[in-house]
Length: 297
Length: 342
Image 1 (cartoon, each protein chain N blue to C red):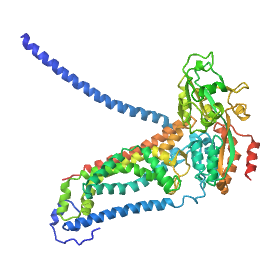
Image 2: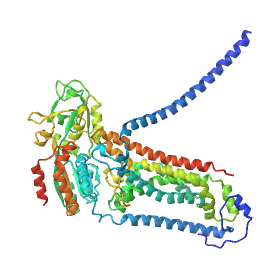
Image 3: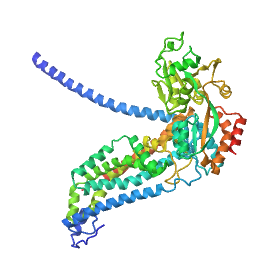
Image 4: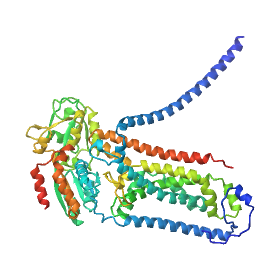
């Protein structure tokens, strides 16, 4: 009798140990999530508390001023739009083109493998290096010392190009090869296969990759700091040759002002930057889910 | 793109729609066409990339000058608030003139100024001989204007109750190259045993240049084991959060943060003098009160809007400098410089 009751207790003990171990790990994982979320929440809360009182239409529609309460974010907002727009114009054809070439046309030779490896490496190069490259090549050599929007956009293009190429390559790889085979069997040539089969299928993946890469370009400050230097701008760029500033730099400039109220203005600027970034990421998610829900055979 | 004639063999239309393919022309891919296409796609790739970069070079390489309604200013972060204020007010009358004001530090500003890249350099120290030489070699003439005064303020933590005045010798012993002082009791007999931590601007700053020249008797000669930052707010935060701290930076950063800092009077042989609008203006806050300059490219000065801007600058700098925390010159001094302009 005693023996028979002893065995279940042992088993129970073992069982409870397994349950305990399970709980420990679950708690650990939840803790990991909570730490991440709490950090983000603290940051958001802090920024919102500091910045919301300053966030109004006047802030969005006027230029930076020496007086905190008259300061606005129009010039850097427009600068960011210019930079991202031009970067997109340059990045999308070059990046998608490279990906298509590498995935669909290039033979798997040693040379092409080295190119692919290098693109992957370039995606990991610190952004400040691209800034220095841009200063030397675009600003000093190409534009004669003029720190204009085009130089900034070209530098950003170099920065995000590897990311766009890799994302597009992954999207192309995800297209089942049976689709291609079917198209080839129809007698299509390679360009027709790319145009009619691969691109439409890979487009959602490419788009979200491109948008995420462009949102990186929005938040990036190091290369632009080198290209445009810290500068106080009170006009909207009117041509690719205009001087400019971008949101992260303007925030940085405000934080280094002696007057205390500029911290609040900087926080309001951070909110604007976050809204821009979140809406771009939201668009990326929307595109992905919209096309994923489409029935496929 | 398709340069060969496709065979027009009809395939069952159902097959096409099943795969939802939109292929118009069908043709068998034989090896000849394959190689032909490969060559073609490569040349297309090269041509497109050339076109793109050509277009970029064409649209950007063109008119970098000629745009006369732009006045480029760069340089000292200390002078920046004044230039910013003047530019802001000036643009209320002349919104057609674009005036980006950069903050690259005095040295960084001069680097761009001596190559003719910018029209006006903000400087918190006079131009160096080496920079002057470089400007001459590049054929750039310039005019110097004093726009305001600043008093480099030496500050400690407000909790520090034992020090209210330091002599310039004591400052030198703390800051000179190779100094190993790391405790307040090494600064003066009678100071308590308290760790001394130093905060100051980085080496690209004109404030650093001026402080080292006046206190350490040699420009740029300073101990390097201190917390250096080009952002003066970092220094303000550092000193206000560290009970044993000693730091120095421009007067504006002290006046804006007077509640969380304690300013130290300086004794240069004539008694202890605290920095204030009065003592900086009459130069009794010595040796750390200093003039702040703008340097104007003479070729740019020929342009009417630049000339107008400089006149506006000298007429309004006094009032605007005080608004942003600096000390203006006397009206007579501004007038004398204005007359020199004509």
